Image: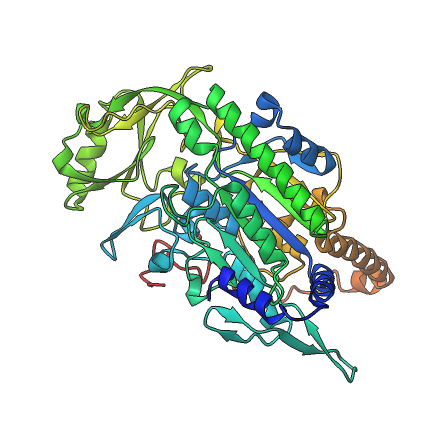
Amino acid sequence: MSLLAGITVTTLAHGDDDDAGDDADEDADHINKNSHPKLLVISLDGFRHDYIDMYKPLSLTGLAQRGVRARSLSASYITKTFPNHYTIATGLHEETHGIVANNMYDALWNETFHSCSSSECSQWYGGQPIWNTNELNNKQNKTEKVRNNRTQELIRMRRHGGESHDVVTPYSSGSIYWPGGAASVNNMNITFSRDYVNSDHDNYLNFTQRIDLIISWFTDRETPINLGMLYNEYPDRTAHKYGPKSDEVRASVLEIDEGIAYLLDQLKSHKLQDVNIIVLSDHGFADVDGFVYLEDCIASDRYLLTDNTPVMHIWPIDNSHELKEELYRNLSNCKGMTRYYNDSIELVNSHYSNNRRIPPIVVVSDIPEDDLPAKLILQARNSTNWDPKGNHGWNNTWEKMHALFIASGPAFKSGKVHDPFLNVHIYPLMCEVLKIKCPTSNGSLSAVSDMLITSNALLNLETAVIVGLVCAIVSSIILVGAIKLWCSPPPPHNSREPNKAYGLPMSAANGLEGATLLESSDEEF
C-alpha cells in the first residue's frame, strides 16, 4: 500500500466521526512525545564548507548560530558522492564498507556498479548503516516488531512491574534518496524508503516535497520514525555545470536555504521542535578548466577503465603483472596526473587500498597550485564534448574538498564552532544522539563529543577517572606488601599475543574482523 493510499483509507475510516479531528490531534501529541530521541540528517550534495560564508544563506547561518558548526568536514578519500554518503551512514572507511566509487568493478563477481542504491544492488553494500542500526535496537530493547509486507503494526510492550499494556512507538527509520538508503543491506528493509529518481521521472520529488514527506513520516499515525535521512542533489549539479563560484551556484544555495526555512517552519507547526537536525554535505568542490589525456601515454586497448575523472580506475586487460608494470611505467609520461599502485603508502594512508574493488592502478589529476582551476582526466580527446566548470574527487587533504557540517537541537550545544573532523566520526555521533547501541566503526565519539550537551561517553570517562583514583588509593594501602615481593623471582613469561579482536584496528592493512569485502574476502553479501 502506498503512503497516499494509507492516508486515504485513514481519512475514510474517520469520515463519519464528529470527533475525528480531536482524535487526530491527540494521536499527533502522543506520537510527537514518544520516548525515543529523534534525528533528521539532511545532505546537500557538494555544498562546500565555505559556501555559507560566501553566499550568506540566512536560515543555515541561523541554524549554525543556534547550534554547532564545524569549520569544515573532511570528506573521505575518494571525495565522491556514493562512497562518502555511505561512509557517513556506516562510520567505515570506503575500503571497508565496499562502496569505493560511484562506478566500480568487482573482479570476483565480474560485475559493475553504477551509482545504484536500489534493492537490486544490495549485495554491494557492506557494514551496518545507521538506518538499520536504529531499527535493530528494537530487538536489543526486547521490542517485538510485526511486519506485513509494506505495512507495520503498532508494537506493544509491557512495562516491568506494571499490569497494563502500553502502546509505544518502535525505533523506525526513513530514507529519501540517500545513496544506499533503499538497498536491502544485510537483507533488511527499513520502515520507509524512497530510491532516487531523476528529475524527468514522474515520481521525482523536489526539495520541498521531500521535506513534506519526511515530516509525514515523523508524524505517521502508525509507525512514526525517529531517524530520517534526506538527500538533495543540489548544489552539486549546478556546480558541475557552472563552477562553485558562479552566480548559478549562489542562486542554488539561496534556494536550498529557502527549503531549510520551510523545514524549520514545518517542524514547529507539527510540534517537532525536539528533532535534532544535522545538515551536512558529502564533499567540497573545485573549479576546473581543461583536460589531460590518458591516450598520451597508454593505449586504450590495454586496460579497462572504471569510474570517472578526476580519479580513474585502471584495470590491466589481462590482469598480468607484466601489463600492470607496463601501464604504470608508461603513465609516468602523462603530464598533469599522478599514478599509484593500490598498495602504495599514499593510498594505504588514505584508507583506500584494502578492497578488491580498488583497481591495481589509480590515476588522479594533480591538485593545482595557488587558486588555479584543476584539470580533469579523459581517456581520449575525441571521447566527449563534456565541458564542466567544477568537480570533486581529489585527496581530502585539499581544503576545497571539505564539506559542510551544522548540527542543532536539544542534544547539541549552542553557538559552538568545532574544529575540522573526518566524516567517519558522524556515525558514533548519530548513535549517541539517538541513544542507541551501535557496532564498532572507524569513527570515534571522542572526536565530536564536545559538541553535545551531554554524552554517555563523557560520563563513562568521568566514571573511569573516579575508579582510577580509588584504585590508586587502594594500591597505596597494599604498597608495603608489594615491596616485600619486589625481590621475588619473576613469573614465567607469557608469550600469548594480545587479543587482536578487541577494538577496531585503524590500520588499513589490519582491516576489520568480520567485515565483508576486505581484500582477502571472497564472501558475497
